[in-house]
Length: 443
Image (cartoon, rainbow, N blue to C red; front, side):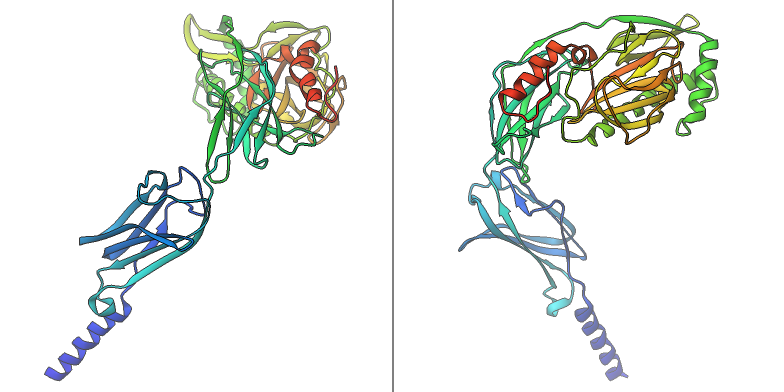
């Protein structure tokens, strides 16, 4: 009996030793291309407890231990981070390297010494940030308006563009230029940017090395008017049921006013997000060659960035900004494309009702809202002046008019600049010609 008990105990111990699991090692972030600010973040887990952890880095014939720790008592989880930029004993150098992580647990494995797990991987250290040289010398931008900067970035393949506060405007290779490092970025100073908002050219490589470059920029602050808009029950009865019937994503809030407020706030924000997503699909080429056109014989009824205070039965219920121009002419007036481009959307689109969105290339879109019908469909190429629809009052509109917006890489901007041939020549076309764009937009 004693012998049987001993054999069973021996088999149990042997089983625990043989079947003991190894620690699980995982990198919390990639460590393939390592930049100046890279962090090695790793997690080690083991139900029996982690007893020790060792991390070494080798470049060439030099190997350094960067983490060497023992844990008593053993820990079920260990999270460690190593930042090469803060390392005083080891300095990474440009080029390849080899990472080795070894963790030992507190199991019965390996004759009670614990089992070991190893993670090994190669990496490449890239420690030199990109370089930016701004080539255009004068830049003037109105609040809510646009300008263009031309610059050279090396190496040419890195991501670059203009950062204006939280807004990002991607830079593109100069079309037709012999220099592969030459870039241009049409950017905006957002209408709601606080005074003093920083604007920089920025470049970032795949190793997350980032560099900023300032440039000579004169910002002209601008005030936008405030208007009070009374909301009547007959208006709510006109617009709310129509929009809800076309927009199943908006949940019925139980009353016309609550539904209106959900449309005016939530659906408006969703529409703006969808426009930014459309701009991200814009073709990386100029689809237009002439200045943009305002709707023929139209009068401006509401302007860009009007701040609206909505009043219902004598009390304020909402505030929103009107990001576009309301253009009025005759009822069911023919609506022409403002410039050459490709139709991205011809459908019912939230607060804008029946809507057409046209891509003009490099993230520049125009929007035509509150339409009656469509003469084009998504994917159609259009010419400036071509009739694409008729005006109406679909969506969030009280009467027949065209809502016209210009969107630059997701940011709504003032259309008046793009309607001005002199502005287009000075801020865009002339700079493109100066640096060899082929073919540039014309006067």
